[in-house]
Image 1 (tube, rainbow, N blue to C red):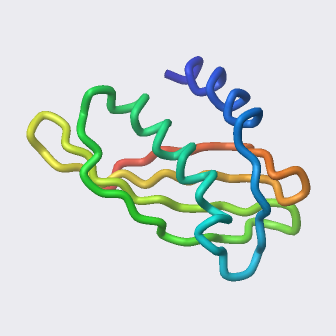
Image 2 (image 1 turned 45 degrees about the vertical axis):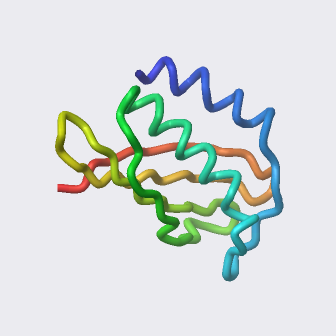
Length: 105
């Protein structure tokens, strides 16, 4: 799975770009990262229906990096799971730096 992410992340760098603002993000500001989060979820939960998706907000990490959070509800083995995807990106070059996927308990 980690190898797959290492391959997918650079591909997303090439295909998506948008302006990012540290203040109240507009939907177009985080849409790029929502598409990335959705693609990662489809890879991590292949063939499982994504039942819900919601933008949870943005956190400033430091002067150069932001994190956008997305909450997904996925059905796996007839059970619903809530999964948080955190996408860290660089303000200067609008590139994705890290993607973390965590199931809520």
